[in-house]
Image (cartoon, rainbow, N blue to C red):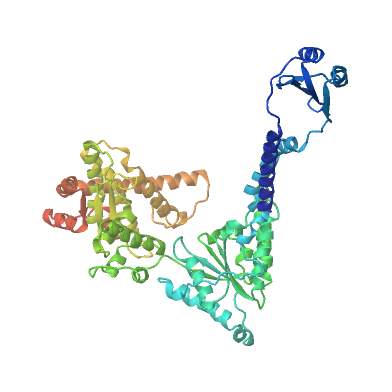
Length: 592
């Protein structure tokens, strides 16, 4: 519709300019002008041989005896008098009838701004008004896409693949389930953090089953205009049913499936609830249907209970970040179409990538390939992967950043404080590398190794607090008790951890009764006081730890100022040299 309107508008514009051009071409050549009195005098003196009157423009053209043409204008109603004088003087008189001027050029010119405004409104608001429905599903005569993705293209999610195999079996042979009296779940909800492969899994299910795949986002259904979202839901489900067997995949389903409230916030909230209601109705009509809905979200806690009840999204499939074995499989999968050096050890690399998702690992391998291409290498080496991993974890180096010598020294002390505390505390994560080269938004970074442990003990949580405070404690040693704002981000992360220890983990003096916040002012003050106790104790422990091992701290600072980057092996060598150890009286080294 928008295309037809814009085409018509373009034709009108072209027609207007063509008519203007023709009108300009039809105009007569400009002639010398004389006054009406002069023209009458020339006629009476016999100097005029021909006279042509044009009542449309009220102009008279006179041909003089010497052949020269002149033109004069005459008032309305003076044409007969002028022609009478010419006839009396034996002048040949001709006349043109009065012509009506075309109203089209003026009409088009006046309507052109309005037409352009309407065209722009339709162009930008057309998709919101439902004119872009085609992007949600194909037309009746064109089947939806059948993905080429297979389960062999998925790695690090073996449990999710095993559960989704049931969907493929049902789509391949539904009669086997129907004969046994079994009902396959109508919907499968994929839950996991961003980048873990939920969309890839959904495409693999459709590819394995060989059925059309309708992929869309929850935000595609949410519109401000009442009724548009519900109409889109009906359209995409109707298109899927026409295929017989199909998979509808709704990514970020929390955008449309958020829990309803008794008081929707404005028309937008009301429209979202209407859309959700239509989605619930459509999913209820899937009995013995070959259409299965897959939803994906990282906010399953905000979904409406009616959406997750049996009969709709019956099955919830967890797609967490991959473990060490899963990361190894993902790295090996991405290595199939790339050339790697023989010294590359994916198992070792997987150990150092704890917490990274499949998307992070894909970015890491691609960054290593780009680094290899920039250096002119035909293969990807361990050095390329290590550099890419450092970029992924700590940010890209900013070698051109201007850093004063004073700031460079403060950064070295700050990062050395983190690194020494992390290395010496038995319950802390071991540091992999520490650098004073600016990376990302930070002036320096200490990279901790991480692990795949799902549980955090109290000693480990306390050690994390001490390591976070190590930067501030080292600054105080360097600046004789003074300090900078460089520990702001450390305090923010430490405060968040300490708050969880008090209100969720029961790891404070308040005990387990404070696992949740009640919202009362007095209780909030007690929680804040307990958090402050944990942070002050961690800062005191960090000060004592670094003062006790001042020689090691100074050696790490000197090494950073010389080499700019110190790895874990160098830290271990320096610690052996100075026989460094954590004081036994620290809170994080005590038991019980």
